[in-house]
View 1 (cartoon, rainbow, N blue to C red):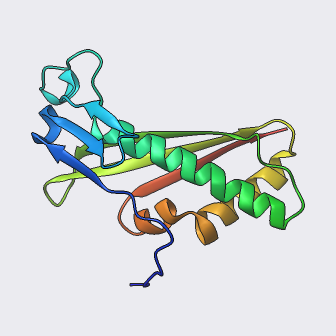
View 2: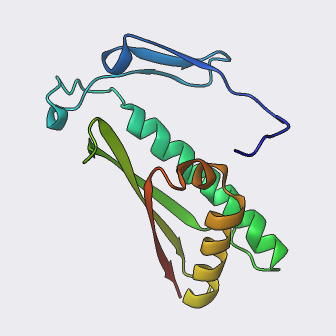
Length: 145
């Protein structure tokens, strides 16, 4: 396992698990949670799931990684739209697991260039991708010009 020198630490606390509430200590994130009906829960309106939060974080983080890689390659990927679709389901080995599809869209860059930038962002920079590697099935879908 790689060690890091922390530059920033975000802290959040959840109470009540998937049918409770979670909030960051600085108040930037504060959401009520409920289990979706598809998972046998109440699916309360105006609530989130841990998967919503993971998807939002991964999409934003990957966008930053793509922009970073783009700048290194003297390409502008700052306007790329990143969509993270996070799925949860039973694992073959028991318990539950996640799967992620990252869709990277930027019509201002040729398909091959965008695909190469996305691959490098995924393999070299994005900490969410590093954390998921070997644990979560992450698929990249790239849509350039």
